[in-house]
Amino acid sequence: MNNRYEHTQVGYLMLVILCIVLAFMIFFMSFYGFNLIGFIAVLVIVLVLWMFTKLTVEINGEFLKIKFGAGIIRKKFPINEINSYREVKNRWYYGWGIRIIPHGILYNVSGFLAVEIEMKSGKKYRIGTDEPEKLVQAIQESIVK
Image 1 (tube, rainbow, N blue to C red):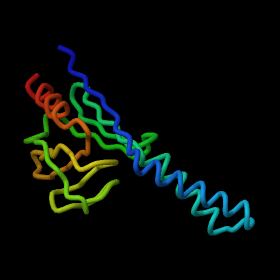
Image 2 (cartoon, rainbow, N blue to C red; image 1 turned 60 degrees about the vertical axis):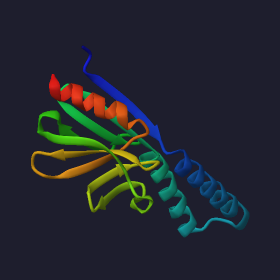
Image 3 (tube, rainbow, N blue to C red; image 1 turned 135 degrees about the vertical axis):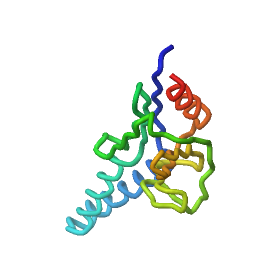
Image 4 (spheres, rainbow, N blue to C red; image 1 turned 180 degrees about the vertical axis):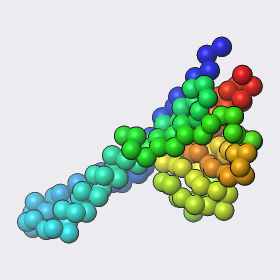
């Protein structure tokens, strides 16, 4: 049995909004001239686009790994430390990105669906995904193995 799972979710809404804002900022800077604050804002938007518009979830043997964008921000959870896991739906105001929520720490780029994992230490994490059933099944198969 192949014990491998990998899925990347793209935050299309965030991607479109940030690209529109970026285009407007570049247009206004080219029309009105260089502005240091505008230039810094453009750099921040480009950085956010590069780092936070996709979330990759991977299970390969002994770890459940997540990484945002290019992979600078990443986290891994030992499979043998996962105590429980379940599909959940996040409230709209929990937002996207990395957030501390009442249910632990949320990692999300789009939508409201997630898989909540509770570690043996008692810490809880929610991993946003557009295919929670497949992620739950992959975690279950990894734990059973």
